[in-house]
Amino acid sequence: MKPIESWKYIFLDTSVIIDLLQNPSRFDKNKNHQQRIIDTQKLFNYFNDCKEIKGKEYVFYISAITISELSVAIDTDLLDILLILLNSGDITFVDFTKEIAFNLSRNIREQAPDYSINQILSHLEKELKGDNQITNTRNWIDNDFKIVSTAKSLRRLDVVLTADRRTFTPICQKLDIPYIETSDLPKDMFNEIKTN
Image 1 (cartoon, rainbow, N blue to C red):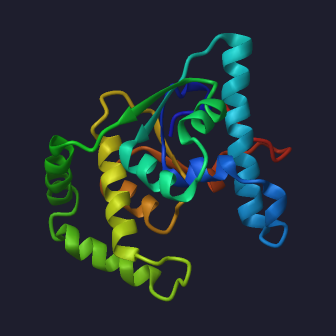
Image 2 (image 1 turned 30 degrees about the vertical axis):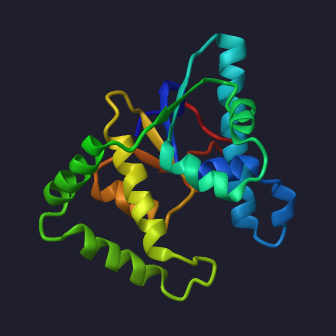
């Protein structure tokens, strides 16, 4: 994985945007979740500081699928929120096109030749069985496949940021996408995010 200071083209999973919108103090009872939110927000503060101090430019990619997921969960003007949160870089919204859909099918055959998309979906569904927070598991996993495939379609991509280790991470692994979970950001000896 490239060091954080070298990132420029950054694709954001829905889970990362949700963490940016969260108040970490609401998660006092779940310290791991709280720390992930804090680290995610610190990372974006770093991006903003680099832009203001060093003039570094970032390009943040967000899938149209993510926008549709967020528009259901957030009742205020989503675009305004995204512009405020991501003021450290340009935002590029990426559509899920028929080319991406065809590439998804081809990538599954290349990366996991012994499996079909339905077999992988079934496997991930079994992993999530019993999770009461997930209402429509199949739709959620299907959307994650579409989001990862959208990221894979980009010509320039340094990293995909995700907080979702249960479904999004395994899909990134299957499709050979450079990713990092925000709960696993590199840290220095002072427990601060290591950027170099």
